Length: 147
Image (cartoon, rainbow, N blue to C red; front, side, top):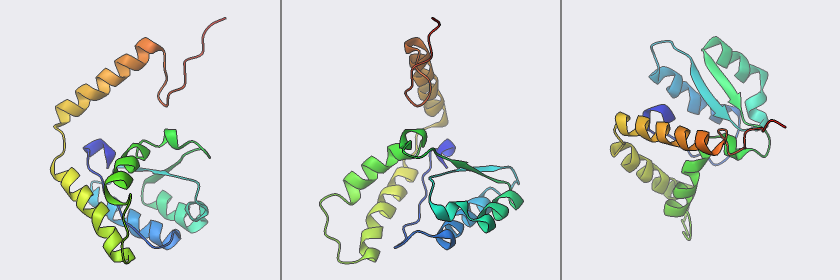
């Protein structure tokens, strides 16, 4: 829930359609007002399953796929660096359960100390202003110049 400045995550031993569904159902339930939910996904083959796509369409979940080799287009990727650095780097966890506790602790602390919505809005405006001055689109690509 990037727009709310809150992060939420589930850590699983393997990736698959059942785990993706398990992660998305609570998100859909949390947004009970019935508005659309936009979910940014990579190109994992489980995300392309027809049952999954049908469930998403029926439940007003818009699946937004990032292009292959374009992690820069996924706004959540910026949060993975600190998550890895502060919870997983140079660690030797005895099992998966213990390994999961670190990221969960970090997410709880981060969500407890969220930034004020006015501060977030001001930061977004400032980033947009800087990008427009430099002629840069969202994602870091320069604007095309007229020849």
